[in-house]
Image (tube, rainbow, N blue to C red):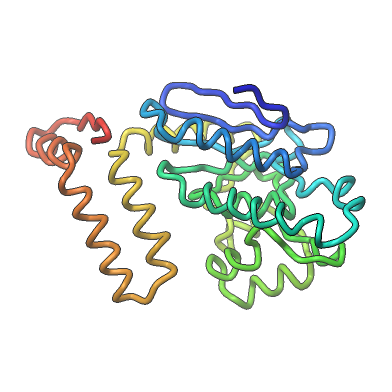
Length: 261
């Protein structure tokens, strides 16, 4: 499938989705979100792909946010009444994609950029990255889940500070508060992402999917319900050939070769 706003590349077990609008610092529009949805659908059933990377084109920006030149010409809420929920659904699809999704944050990640990064499982940022949800400065609030995912990740107090002030924060501060997992030098970003991708790709796809599902669903439930979710996901793993291979490999003192079934 041909895309206008994104580029899909595949290398071994890793698929990379690159938002490719460098003239506007990879700012997203509704078409960008629809293309992300379509590309996720395209690779969801590709068993050769075990890890997904989301990033932005060039060296300046991951995703600078929403395309303000388009938003400024949107007259009222009726124009967004269908687009906003559809965009939120794309974020949900990233968050619950059955394969690990890594955000490669190579520069500016503001507004929708931070919100898309929040949907990813693990975030690795360059020291040059800048994050934040500055929508308040435009008279709006985050609309792609920022007000919901930030407090779940950082706590209510810090989330309110970021949303209410619209302040930008450095990659290092983002790491200190738990917004990103890893911060590396600009020249080391690709190596760090590749290293993590290969580590995850060597694991059982079923166990990765079930671990992700157990955490995501459990976070929305009370502890008793969460334990039931965990038990269901555990049993799904235990019934797989990957479990047999993993345990046999352990007993035979060799590396397992997981097949994903």
